[in-house]
Amino acid sequence: MTASRTFGVFAIVFAIVYPIVYVIATEVNLALFTYHPALGEFGLGPNAPRNGPAMYWFGWMTTSALCALVVAVIAAYLPERLTKRLPATLAWLVPLAGMIAAAGLMTKYFVR
Image (tube, helix red, strand yellow):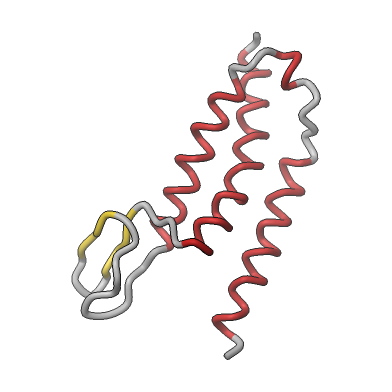
């Protein structure tokens, strides 16, 4: 196993898993933490707004990054016979689909 193959598999799997988890995290509100800008405080998990709006975006990104990191590290150390069929085109197709899905899901907030 070479370092370049390991990093290549890591990068492809991370790019595939991150947008999938991000779309799920935004829809189910799986924020690792919530930021309350009016109070300047962080709360663990998705907390209800207190004294102003709550910002979940940072928590969604952290949740997605940690999940993608774990899956990508596991995939990077799988045997080559299991990962050689992983198409690199998924590394840009899945994030593109994730952006389209996220944009579609966010339209319900802007078109009321």
